[in-house]
Length: 388
Image 1 (tube, one colour):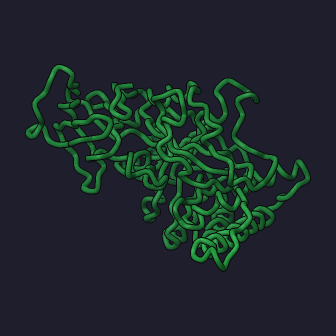
Image 2 (cartoon, helix red, strand yellow; image 1 turned 45 degrees about the vertical axis):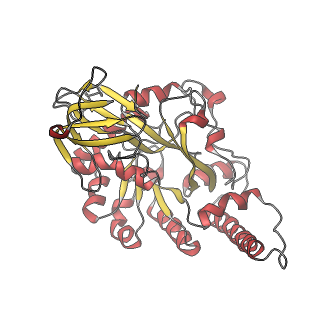
Image 3 (cartoon, helix red, strand yellow; image 1 turned 60 degrees about the vertical axis):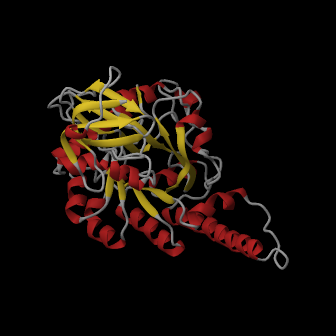
């Protein structure tokens, strides 16, 4: 199929823009180019009539299908708060793909979400990347299982476990539990590697599901997505990541503007958001729509997220618009909810830009409409080549 007569922003490495272009696809993108090179069209092809075609939006931190919409406690599956360290739990087993918010996400142009556990536990579990439309069976919608490992620092673990008079009740307690589990996993990794290299002279380590789950983290195959708002909590995450040579992405990063130079020097990216919310607890005191603009000016790599259900996932483009209002350039705001978001989630080989071989996920707006405008909704959305 071909969509033609569209202004196409590819957001590929060349950042190509076709003022009047076409995109040919099946489940994956076959070709993107100028209308002068467009293949022969048929009755099944789609005339964009001068509209703007963008990559499908990527929400890099959300809990869609985790806290069921309008379900109350029965739909609350976000935190396995019986144990502060649960790296073995999988978002694949908690997300309800029939949650109505997935349909609302797709209608808003959000085609991919990274879903993971909440922030009760210092080590909370495994995140997944999935499409917002498709099969009612989640296994068919997930295209990267164990896409990241969720950690959490700051108020949330303290508040939950203090109420139960269990560890951790302080920030140092939270950090110590994370370190303890990583030390155990690192020793488990060493013993596992020794056994694999020489099974005759080494014993296989006794199976430990928590340590097993952390092996991809220690091998740097996946990143840690660390919930942290306050600057000191951000630096605790950075410190631990350095100690264990982990790939790190800071999630929320509310006070990141105040430490932007240090984050740039450390090479640590951030996922900022939610932006459109109240300062509901002490560590959100520094919440500002100016954060994105400051990080961009300082050269810090970042994306924008909703933290659904804190901000409903379909309003991801609107939160990018607030960042624009706060000083972020339009092109950078678009990247923060497409290709940069995909890259920080480790899924930019599949989504985030429009180029050969990537998933056919894209959003079409009517002529002259801006993706971030509160009055704008997509005219058409394609996910995996299907008009949804």
